[in-house]
Image 1 (spheres, rainbow, N blue to C red):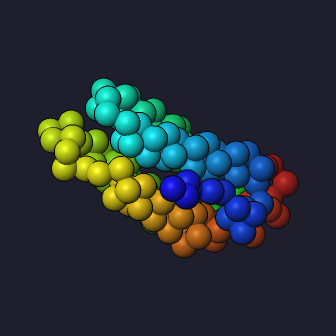
Image 2 (cartoon, helix red, strand yellow; image 1 turned 180 degrees about the vertical axis):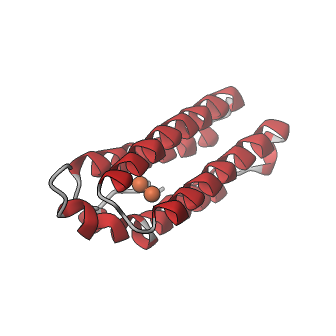
Length: 135
Ligand SMILES: [Fe+2]
Ligand SMILES: [Fe+2]
């Protein structure tokens, strides 16, 4: 099974944010590994870790966007909020009925969840963050 991978074309030009994104990739792969096993308690705990780290990353990223006067900060924040909700819903579904959420579907869902956001949204802040002396 091919795990999700971070590649250079996903770089937002800020090393710390790239490190956060790599950690999210790692956590998504851990969710897949946990779901491929048969201990559903492990799945819930790694989904909780993914949610915690996602909230941390989004908060740090929003601080950075505010510091570099990124013009679409509000829209970006709204997208972050709905992404957190999506994972919370998936976690609830899994808790209610672990068999209803398969490992490969989840990997597919979380891969798109992260990659579409980095490529479609995060890469847009690159020119603002790169040229800002405070970062
Ligand atoms: Fe973001
Ligand atoms: Fe991000």
